[in-house]
Image (cartoon, rainbow, N blue to C red; front, side):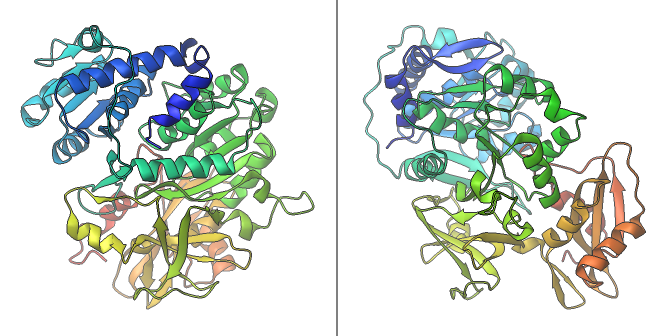
Length: 523
């Protein structure tokens, strides 16, 4: 299937139904579908070939997402641009990924106007919500498409055409461009629809609360494929998010763990909000505290669903389904199960490998490697980096983990995050799980810092819950009790807020820089 087919399936089955809701305004499948066709026809009228790269610089917005659908309908390539990213990061992505068409909201017009001289490859500038005089040569979306047909264009599609060019988060250096195709995107959708069961004529309601330039955008596709409705939250406001769940009878949504922790801090949340419509509350993008996961199950119900993926294998290497959070007797599952990311999904191969590419026995720790239709085509204009990551048909994920006796996949840590202290390997995620268990700890990150005696010393950087206090010595003692002295932090620093990416991941590279910049070596 072409990626646009997932929207069109819902359009055929529910043309008058609400495809999207934003600020109480309902957008029908007919309305969105027609506009996406006009956008696609306008792109094709420009004489642009397939895989032409277009970006949308906007917050969560129905019209912005419709521009993405229009790009896909023309078999062109969407470059996700994070509205919360730094200006320089977005400039790098647009320029190095060879963007030719930029759709943008008026709110970003002045910023974009300042970047125009540095973006010579962009040939068409389209403001999606009015005029933008500051951006030279720009047109309003309404004017640009007003004479275009609302009929579906006939466009040749091959499954390996690139339809999404996403920047990696990366731990060092500039972000790489991950080329995902119709094939990898449809495999993501297939995995999600296999794991999330909606029967008969039941239509899901998806809440797009996280940025649609990340996982929330892809997660909206299976919903619209079933003729369901996507409720678009335009601001990262807990009140909007929680209000939308009961108001629209939301059945599914995704949030990163850091946002879930903040929801759980709201006094009386379970009594204040009706969560009875929820079927799938998805979490991922970063490890989740087992203790906070148990609290989430008690608060939101038996609906939590863990997910594991990468930009290079989008969002669905493994899922931990809601029922798998419980044992056969209806009790919450063991900590070991809850700390896993679930069982690998059906349409991929997943093995644990040694550094030399040997497949390791069950239970042994090594690098998680994946192959199959979910895997990216490669890195954009980076054959050497592609060859380092795609080896003998396998995606070397850079994640370290193991598979337990029940077949559940566990991520020990990122390969590059491992700390070697005094000759011992220390996996930060193991230490972070212990720190998260302390009631005063909101979030934390464990990193290695330079140390004359140990080479690297284990340091915890901790963000506390509002109004809570705990001594560094108490946290160190807790880790020594649970893990022993080798893995326990030697020091603890407290911060107001940990640095995070727009997707909610803690930026350990930023934390490390504070401690390693003065050091002659960086590891």
